[in-house]
Image (cartoon, rainbow, N blue to C red; front, side):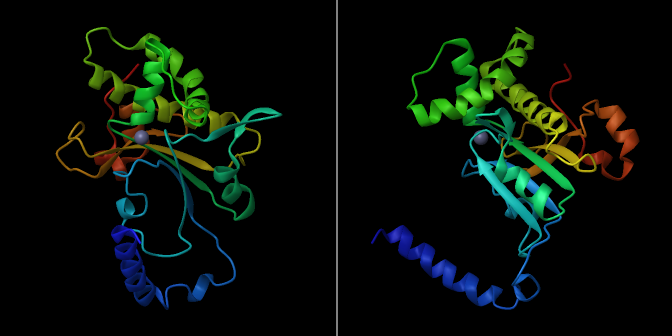
Length: 226
Ligand SMILES: [Zn+2]
């Protein structure tokens, strides 16, 4: 057996010991307060970023590029992974989590600019991202480094995923939608691992957001106002 798997199993044994009583209230059902959609990048620690160790509190979805949509026979729709808690567990908050230096956003940028040659599974994921990002790539200021351009597109991608949620008739109208960027590259601040709020219910102007949500004003900032 891979030594790493053996190690993981040992950690899981510790987890099971620590969590023995934490499932008491959620043995038969769940009512998560929020659904989060994060990039599955190994550096984006989905539950740890919120110090969440409480079963039943967060419904966590992960995929490359923190996408909220999937392609079906009915066209582009909000993905079932995200929709499930909004429709079935009365979850009223959706949080889209992008991150600095996202590889999926980088690949989408590359697909839109120079083209890529990915295996079809990855190409399919990128095909779900690129239509939303094409306009953003067009609007990027010309004097940016590639890295700075990608980090602006990370914000643009979060904005676009939020628009997909807002436009969907499947998402209940009373769901509030928050967009954040997880930064471990010191692009927003020197607090590695901090999330920065960039969009709430489609509003992406930082000053307006600060006025509307003074209690979290110090957490609101964005790199790109387009
Ligand atoms: Zn990513």
